[in-house]
Image (tube, rainbow, N blue to C red):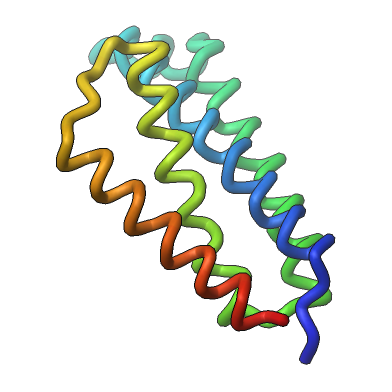
Length: 117
């Protein structure tokens, strides 16, 4: 099966949106207490879950017309975005080892993109 660029863009977009969902869950987790009310009324958790839902719609759209073996590894782009969001939103450190890992992820995704053509 041929994997169109549009499928790759849908899945990559889903990865980016999903990584923002992780930010919402992390931000929401900081406000969770030992009661159900803090879960239900936590808008940050709701936003994170909503973003995960949107990312799932993007994934479904992308997976519909492409090879799973090409597209699913592209979800790893979300790991790169999550590293950036963690620095921007939570002040987490970006270490040389994390940069190396991101470069390896990018190299792998690039290889998959070349294999698709």
